[in-house]
Length: 413
Ligand SMILES: Cc1cc2nc3c(=O)[nH]c(=O)nc-3n(C[C@H](O)[C@H](O)[C@H](O)COP(=O)(O)OP(=O)(O)OC[C@H]3O[C@@H](n4cnc5c(N)ncnc54)[C@H](O)[C@@H]3O)c2cc1C
Image (cartoon, rainbow, N blue to C red):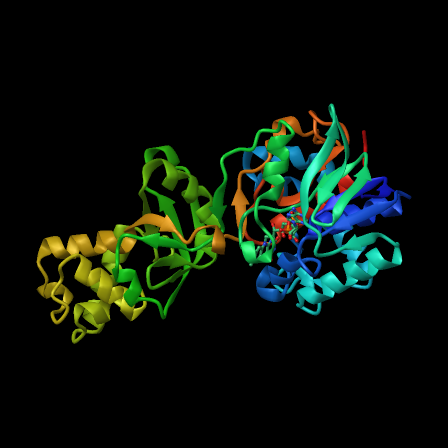
């Protein structure tokens, strides 16, 4: 049975879908927002540890550069809704925002429900038709033009469809890759998809003895010729099977595609704030004369947490009951080397079930950056994570969802 006709149907109620629906409705279009889960914005609710890191204070150029070579695709969307516009928009619907660290921007309540409630209220105020528990199963087309959607509750008609279905990460929050299937069925290319922003698993098991400690400002590099230029700096945490922490979440989007290719990705990690071998050697020598009773683990613990110190000493075959100067010369050299460049081998990730974002998506080559409209199907638009764009941790991905959703919602032809 056919249902009402709409100017636009938005599929998915994440940040991208909700703002697309609001923008379209404000422009006078009749809008239907469809969400397959029982409530709106499930993933949005989980963002920023429940606090919702909406965006950040970077300049628009630096923001776009952080997305890599695809970043330039965002120019139009960001110019129409950048961080300041986003904060103004939320302020206009009753949500004040702030930044405590001068970089990440949150709602002042530090509660993602504030964001979802305000967006829901605005959808209601604007009289957007919102249906939850409705799964879109197919986008209907006539030749090269969209005509509607087929859903778990029947067909809905519209000549404009906005796909805001998100990625593959955290499937319990709604991500199941439907948007990629829709895109492929309609002739779009979808690039390879990788889990990103997630913990990694290492071959070395000693990490499991160091789970209690955080290493501040660790410098992580990939020890592959092809990836020599890539590095990330930030807090590192050991898990029972590998690595997590902000620096790993950020860097994992570079590592998971390499894992697919090489099976193992060797890392070199500097956990001593960039100190080089000479500086570490001099430090150990000085501490050794200041603390003549220290055994080697106690001595290295003046640089690193005790658990990590012990593990590294054992890795190089040091006798942990003896002092630094009592160790074999080669052991001392190897210890200094491993402190400066700790080798760890990534052999796996925890997969899409714990991936905050998806690397890859609907190819940008077939989407018009000025409109977010498909270059293949008239009336088909994409926004948010379903597209081949992913940024680091720190409000990048949500800002992109809102900016691209806003542009798609204009229904520019
Ligand atoms: C735990 C976690 C924390 C995060 N924290 C941050 C953060 O603090 N800051 C930041 O910038 N980014 C963060 N991210 C990333 C960010 O949440 C996503 O990039 C962003 O939410 C993507 O928005 P979206 O609207 O494109 O997709 P989503 O928010 O994933 O929304 C897509 C919606 O579409 C619905 N849908 C899918 N298929 C269908 C269908 N067939 N029919 C109907 N509905 C459908 C889904 O149920 C879902 O509700 C985090 C991610 C996770 C998982």
